[in-house]
Image (cartoon, rainbow, N blue to C red; front, side, top):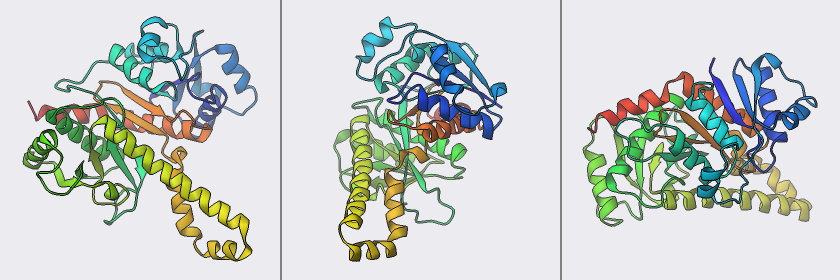
Length: 338
């Protein structure tokens, strides 16, 4: 089994929820975890829960990068921060992948500083999985959207690489033999979206072996037309947070309605399956975190608000990605472009 490094100090509820999530993993699997952070605080949390000490080790460090800190300055000056110590541990071979719910910008920069880009990869991408409606038999209920934060704008060839990286990840982790890949755009026509998107569309359409389904519009994000959706980081980040926000608002509205009238509460019972689907759309804990793709090592970025269950799921996803040789699959996919 792989060893997964975990940033015990990263996230809004660290170290408590992080350590509790790792404790859950130690009892339910053979995954070894390396908790990185202030040893006394980590040990204090472990003493409050059940865990298997054979699967948990601690790498002590005395600093942490805050959620609101400037990422560039923090990565440059805080060498003893848990995020940087953990990423270096992976680069040095002490762990096989890393999980953190910490400062998002610092996570990407730490990877860029200490991990090596795979041969031929120009830019890494943060990919996020999210629940959607399925349209085809055997289709994974989770779609993959990338990039959602590592870039602001990028060139057509970088979007093409994102498509190949996302498709490789979906093949290995979601076990989808031929993932459907779409390009997020403002219309279905090939001429939409400006020069960069038009060129990306042309190149994606011509790639042998890639199951490209064309442009995907915003309303199709929660449908099953594409398993992997490609876009620039600025657009992807906005789209993802909009999807999550709408799901949260709808779930809150149904709860409020049930509290106001008995007749509404009875009606909502009939809609319970649909309401649960809405709750699933807003529940980021079920899919753990977002992989940063393009590096020789794996990094899973958790939501800052993640609880113990979310961290446990992220560790399991990281272990699965290591076992399934995701970086090697991505390297092979990108190699075909050269």
